[in-house]
Image (cartoon, rainbow, N blue to C red; front, side, top):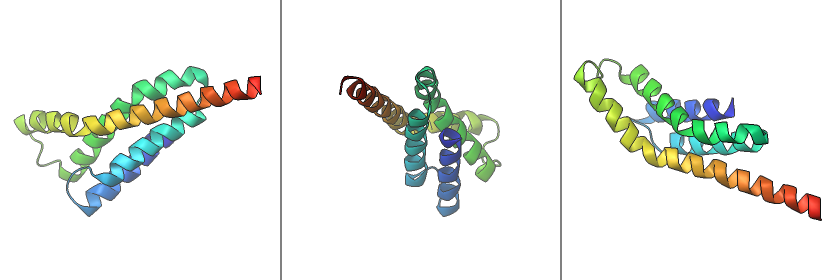
Length: 116
């Protein structure tokens, strides 16, 4: 829920406050991914890291289409999709890094508990 819910909240805030995805979406996507990594099991870590770029792209596309659906007709949809990938890439990378940092911290804490 955190992995999808927080980015959706950020996307809605950004769409209501101005055109396109902005800071609220980026922060919520990173926090949602990090929280999901913190709440998931070891088996779920792979899915959190692998799904984070897809969640960012999917939420971006859904928000843009919902807010500006008439803009993305025909060739404009292909152009818009390319723009979403390019502009979303930094958020995708930041979300994946957040998940990896949380996973590394959890592994380190587990090792410390076992040995300490």
